[in-house]
Structure formats: structure tokens, C-alpha cells
Image (cartoon, rainbow, N blue to C red; front, side, top):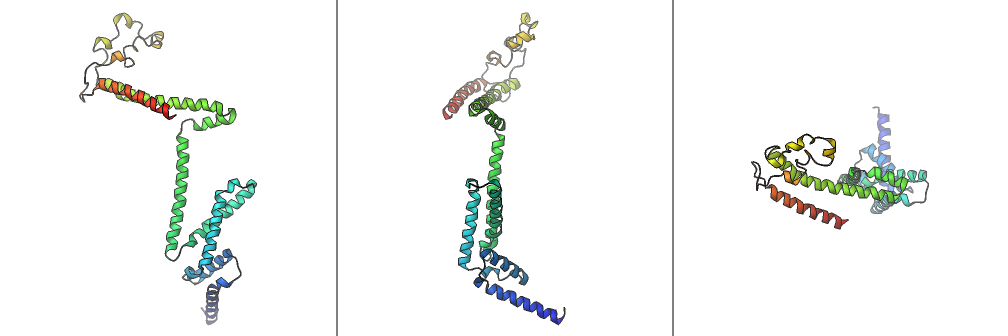
Length: 264
């Protein structure tokens, strides 16, 4: 680098320093001040940027950021066309993203920017989680489509049907898990005792379709009926108390049904 180039570079550095020192007296808007301040600070290393804004300027910048946030939150209530809404929304989001992190002081600036970023991520996570919970509700999208075509009165029928389906699924899980499965795994097998065996005079027609649809034949001597279960106090190597389980499942079924009906 020649002596002339070095001298010109030193002059430019001095001019930038004077601009940083006198930035408050410039008749510019806050956005323009910050723009020139950032450019000048980058050119000389960015070490004097922290002291370039007065408390009044920082307060005004905070007010502008809060106004943009309110505009983002209430953009739907504005009587504007969609094109204008999107334009103002995009401008407000850019402004908030650009200047919100500049409100910290010194070393707290990075911490403030980190807190703002984590707050935005947490809000986004909550919104995505709510959408996920809505997507997990059975038939929700289909019911909304039915409601949009036929009204809420028709949709209410399917909502009631979904409620009945969910309640019966819980009751089935109680009975199947605490009565049927223990009897199948630990009880006496089919054919071991008379009440678990189809009589000879019924065996010829025990597998007929008409007989099975009437829950006779093999269905009559299966876990579908109470008479199939053991009358012993405990069954299996776990000493599972099936009679007590049968009693408690009946009480639990009644209690759960009553609780659900009262809540709804």
C-alpha cells in the first residue's frame, strides 16, 4: 500500500469516527441512523456501536418495535385488502426481526437476542403442538368438511358418534385387558371341562353361519359368555384373582360411564 492510499484510508477512518460521534445531531430518521451507524461501525471494527444510541432513541425504537408487534397481532382485524395486509405484515416482521435484538446493552445484547429467539421458537413449538393435537383427534378433518357442506346440526351427530366410539373403546379395553386376556392365557383350555366343550348333539351345526350369527355353537362356549370362565379363586402361576377382577371391572365400567356422562 502506497503512502497516498494509506493517507486516504486514514482520512476515511477519521470521517467515520466523526460521523459516529455526531450521529445524534443528524436530522435523520431512526432507521437511517441505525443503518449508517452499523455500516460505519463495521468499517472500523464495530467497537463503538454500543454507545452510539441515547436512552431517548432506544426508547423510541422500543416503541416502534412494540407498535409493529401490535400490528402483527391485530392484522386480521384491519379493514384492508389481503394484498395490503400481507405487505404491512411482511414489513412489520422484517422490522421486528432486524431491530428487536438491538435493544440490549453491552454484553446483554447477545443475551437479549438469544431470549427473543428462544421466545419465538417456544411460541412456534406451542402452535405446532396445538396443530398436532388437533390432527390426532379422530375424524376431525372429515367432520369439518361435513360441517362446511351440511351445517353444524349434521356435524353434531358425527361428534356424538365419535364420543360414543371413544367411550366404548375404553370400556372394551378394561374388559379385554383384565378379564378376557387373563382367562385365555392362564385359565383352563377349551375342552378341559364340560362348560368349555360343545355338546356332541350340537357339534354338527356348531360352525354354521346362522348358528354363529345367533351367538350359539362355538360362540356360546367361548370367552364371549360368562359361563366359560373359571369359578376358582385364583388362576395361573401368577395367582390372578379373576372373580375379583370381574367385579372391579364391572364397578369401574359403571363409574367411568357415569363420570363421562356427568362431564359432558
